[in-house]
Length: 319
Image 1 (cartoon, helix red, strand yellow):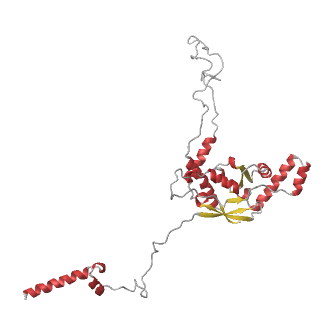
Image 2 (image 1 turned 90 degrees about the vertical axis):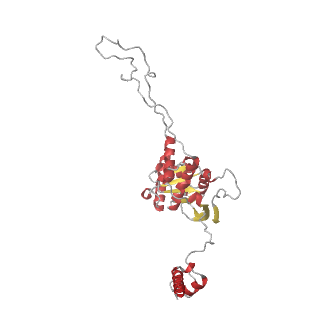
Image 3 (image 1 turned 180 degrees about the horizontal axis):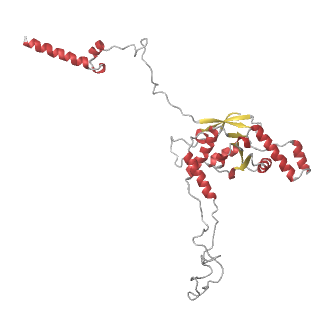
């Protein structure tokens, strides 16, 4: 009898240990008997599909659309695809700050200069005896203590320019363009951006009937009215026009009416110019050349098979 009691007790303990185990660790026969799917985990007998399949490949955005407009009607003429590495970079205020400071330091003249006591003209003899005059001792008239004497630790010509990695500077250029593009303040126009003047005015100017002052005044007023109609004038933050070379009508009008905007050639543009006014109006060819000049960080010096090459410039989608 004692043997039967011990045997039955061990079987009972074994059963308790099996019942305490989770369903995934029980033997297959016991799990089939003890674990069942609840209504919370099974709907109409179909397995739940909450997560996305890992086999789906994530494809990030690689191009952005750019509309080419006609000026001044702003009629869409074509649609191009530009790489996100050119016009869709995230905003980096630190890089833009480095570029603006670098440009400012580079443009400082540093021509301030003062004369030391050895550069002031005149005799270098002692002006009065050391003793016996009842006055303080003094040396030559070039002494910094004398009027018109030399200057102590005065400024001398120096170079204020600082250094900045070229790849960082090129990245700042494209970051500034991307900032304008994201805000809808980058307007790309067809090549040959200029101010279309009325035929009557052009005929009168060609005949020499109008004077230089009258011509400049008419062009500035005409441009001011045009920008006001487009909401590009001084009431809306002014406008920066960027062209490949100097355009007489556009540059003359903006030089006379600078309160509405300014016009710059491509060689005169800096990162700071891309961030100052309310919007940027640039020619398509000028934009291509600008990005082409500032893409050093996108070029692989060592060509390795399988690595991504330099992104292509704008390609036409709709013409």
